[in-house]
Length: 201
Image 1 (cartoon, one colour):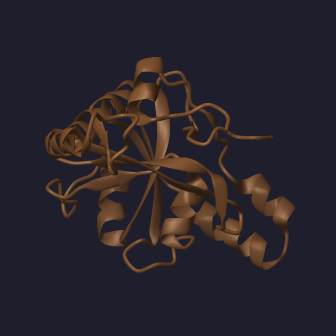
Image 2 (image 1 turned 180 degrees about the horizontal axis):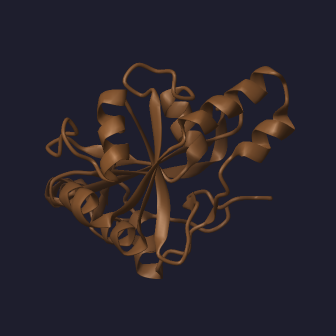
């Protein structure tokens, strides 16, 4: 099936959407205990969340890269997620979104959220011809994320390791069966336009 070039695909329900992050145990373990991020998590740094499980696997190497050994699935409110997108700026200049580079640069400095579209990944973590969204939160957006948006934090490191093990055994069907379900996320039209989500190429 042909995919739109820029489309959010995620696990979501009526009120929440799942995003992924990977951290060292020192950060992940307290987050799992408290159901939210606490020290030594640093609010003064930009934190990136990803709705795509396989893009997260590409980034963290199936939970094997240093300081990314624990893969977390974070359920956050859909209202919070959509607030982030509505208050975002693309991480690169897009002439279809901004009048000129100066307007984009001004927006980038003032926005608490950055979004970027990177090639989605297949089961072998190779790039696909369509894009997946990353969302970078800073300042006010991090505070909202930690204090208001998070509903639950789950450890999906065992899932990451299990998928990798199936692939090592050349059991692709078994690996696919373990992947979290993701489907196109229904964005409000104004938010979709703001972040440059697109129709089928």
